[in-house]
Length: 271
Image (cartoon, rainbow, N blue to C red; front, top):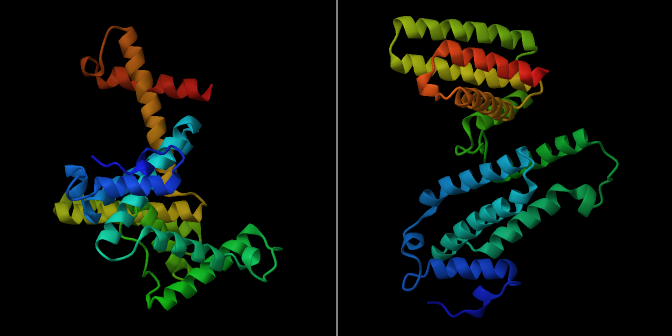
């Protein structure tokens, strides 16, 4: 058992959290589960916690947001602790790095540049500074540095935006819609004539173009799909509640009955 007083100090702040994590990872006295974790095993939890922060914001569950942000902060401390143990870097280096980046990317706040610019101009300047940073990291390709671990829809959008900056983009929404029709036809052909691998390939192409359509329409595919998921959950909940009022469960119903209740849920939302 650790006797570090900082661990039990309510006002210990980030230093307290770092001490807790170090104690959990202590090979002699720490938690057996925490001791055997590494970057790869913790990464899925990091992604999950980031999504839970976004979910709390989406639901405007402000009472939950504090806890979710704490869970996400723990992930940063966890990775930094493992990095320090491996001699790679420490938490202070993480803080210094992001602080330096924010100062460098906001010369209109921390430097001599004028603040008299629109949010759109600031976004353009931000991307210009990021491009300079990528060049300094020897990222020569236009698509270099787009993280592989991003959700697939988000990564597709970032890849498309990068390509569009150098002119590789359809000139209009109509061209994207035509491509969707083409890809849908290829998907049908793969389903009817080709094997599972080709089918998966064509399905991926169709999803990729759908993301591109959203970009041309000013829509974020990830956010739109989250909205569709929430809508499906809400309407299916109506089906379950209506069936329960009839003394039934979904597995005791049939498609015709549930579809009618789905239509009822849609009508109620639009009323």
